[in-house]
Structures are given as C-alpha cells and as structure tokens.
Image (tube, rainbow, N blue to C red; front, top):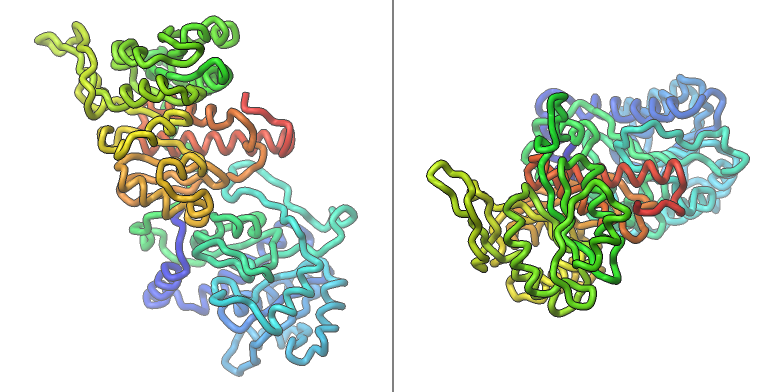
Length: 551
C-alpha cells in the first residue's frame, strides 16, 4: 500500500475526477466510510454525536458522515466553523432536510454552546481541516479546538494500522473507565501535518482515523502517528495502479505473507539455508544467544554462531540447536586475527550477520573492518566444485563459489566499527549489505544529530541507502526499510513492548534467517522487520507494554 504526500493525493483525486469518478462521488464514499466505521464499532442509535464541520472538502466529508449517522438513528449536531450554507451544497441541503441541528461557531457567544455540546456528547467527529492544515492554528479555530480538547484523550489509544489480528476498539461500554467522548478524525486529525507528521499544539488526538485511498506520510511519522489512534484506509474509488510510481509504501500483512519462504513437505535442513552469526563478547553474551535463537525460530535450516572462544560453552549450554565456531579472542573480545578464521568458513554459508554484542575494543574494530571489506573466492575444479579456499584478499566483498556477493546483515557494534573508517561504504560490494541502525547508530554513521534523523526518518533512510548503495533498516517506532533505488517501506508497528534490551539482536537474527532462506536483501529486511514488529504487538497484547523481554 502506497504512502502519499498531500500533493500526490490531490493529483490522484484530480485524475480520478477527470476519469469520471467525480469529487462529489468520492466525497460520498469518504463520508459514508466514516459512518460505517463508527457503526461497526458501536451501536450509534440514540447516541449523541457532535460533528465539527470545516469549510473545505473535509467538512463536506463530515456532512455526508453526519447524514448517514442520522439515518442510522444517531442524534447528530453540526457545529460549523467558516462554512456558509449554499444552495449548490447538496450535502448541506440533505442535512437540513433531515432536520439535523446546526450551531455556527461565529454566532456561539464565548463558545458556550460548544462547551455544553462537548460535555454532553458520546462521540465527536473531527471534520474541520483534514489535509488542509497549512499554517499555525489561531483565532476562533484554536479556541474551538481548545474547548473540545479538554474532553479528548491526552494519550490516544494507538493501534498499529493494518494489523492482521482482531482488536477491540474503545466503545461506549467503556464509559465508566473512559468518561470522555470517542473522537473520530475524518482523513486526519485537525492540526496534523500530512507530509511531516508535525502536530500543531491545538491538534485533536483521535481514537479512530479513517483516511481515504492511501495512508498519508504524516500518519506514519511521530509525533503525528501518536495522534491517529486506530487507522483505517477506506476505498473512495481511486485506482491503485495510478500510484505505482510512488516510491514510499507501508507494508501490509498480505504482502508480507506472500513473501515468506515456502516450506515444502519434502524439505530438509539444507533447503532452508545456512546462516553464520558473528556475535558476542564477555560483556554481551546474551546478544549472541538472542540473535542465534531468533535465526532458528525464523526458519533457517542451520545456524552457526561464531563467538569468542570463552563464550562457546556458555551459549552452547543454553542454545542447543546451533553449531559453533570458536574464534581467537583477547580478554573476552574478538581479536583481529579472528578475521582469518571467519574468512575460511564464511563462504560455506548462504548469509551471515555480524555485530550483535561484539563490543568496541580496538582489536574488534579492526576485525570487523577487515572482515566486512574482504573478498573470499574459493578455488574451483574443472566442474565448478569447491576444492579449497584462498586466504583473504582485502577488497570489496566476500564471494561464494558462484561468484555472487554473500549477503550480510551489519548490526550494532559492527556499525560502530564501520563508522571509524572514512568512506567505508566504498569497501563493500553494492547491494550486498543490510545495515540495521537505530537512530543513535545512524547519527554515528552519518554525522547528523539524532533529532535531525528523527525529524525526517524516511528521507534520511532513502538518502543514505542511495549514497551507500545498500539496504538501510532504520529501526524505531515505524521502522523504515530503504534501498539504493529510492524506495522505502514503512513497517506499521510502534509498541513500547519492543523498547527493551536485546530486541535489536532478535531483529538481526530474523533478517539473516530470511536471507539464508533465499529472499532478496530488500525482501528479507521487509519481512524480518514486519515479523519482528508483529511479534512485539503480540507480546503487548498478551503481556502488556511493560514486562515483555527480548527472549
């Protein structure tokens, strides 16, 4: 599913209108979809619903919604800001014909009528601005929103969009514990910037947002994403193929399920690939365990852990399904000479991972840089069979017997090691690596501040994926996966259940398992990040936002 800017959305609407799907028809579908979504979540009969109506198309959507809710038995009041009734406004006329009560903000002295309505209603429908926010909210609108905001949630109930599990939204049956109106946003909460995710201080945080045709970029970027609540994408008749050239999308459950590696009944362990994981140090033994365990759970046929020699018996006592390579060490950290041992083994695998828990000792940094930048070409006989291995020739990318670059996931302390080498990306074969930084690690790699990165997560991930010619997985709430061709995919999960030590090691292990099973680098990054995020949501549902741990 594509993720669009406000400009792209306007262009798609214009194209739809020109092709015969008129603005009036799209408005009818949009408003009805809001009413249908609300009716699906509660019995609206006799419920008091306050619809805040603005002057533009968003207000028109709100009028359509109000009419359908009235027909469903709700007690609707329109509170209108800067929308003059016109003879050619069919949606206004249909509301008048139904006798729907109307209060005009400009005539509401000191907003007393609004205060009474907000205090007494069950549901508030926000159809004031939508994508029309263009400047700071001031004046009467700011005062209007302040009145309603006192009745709306300080911390919205946030569910990840497109989650393929049934969720129970807040309903009026919860009114004893949530004595406030249920707030529904039409397209976007008023005050949320659709392109940047910035929030005006006056923004109304929603329990439920129904957006139209495609989700908007601002709905996936924090702080805006935190004001959306549950997100539904409603069809208004815009053809999906018109958006094929848009380079940013949000991953959906169906798309990810289709990419999962096949599991044929006649398979054996070799069918599902061999993954090699270089991880761990004396201070971070658990990182090696978590990455290895995750790779086995994610379906790799064989997982080998390459660890500092002293760690092998410790991890082996807890992780029984993996094999091990004992590497030379220096006081619990990998020694630089361990690169030679790795280079003799790595070409026997389908994918490898380096970084979780390695530490930042000087020798370990040298080990990482030598290994990540090495080419390893096995010697072949006349039939192309491997008969021996060459020693490391330190340039541009480990290769397998078929001369294709061996894909690698570079995580955690290995990212720190790379950052110590000027123009490190020139030493890695293009499209060979998946880099998995969190915002702090991305700051180290790029020289930008963490705040700069968080303000433009999609743009930064795309920019550096293109510059480095590698896949970038920028971790965090709504992880961004970007490639060197300018494409980016948003993973629609944001849960504090994943904000605990070791979850990054789990993610790295899942991704390398997907690589070992034959997925392309971009597909492996997408699938791994989605499965990881969904697992976090399941932990949140079963345990809560606190108390879940990486293992």
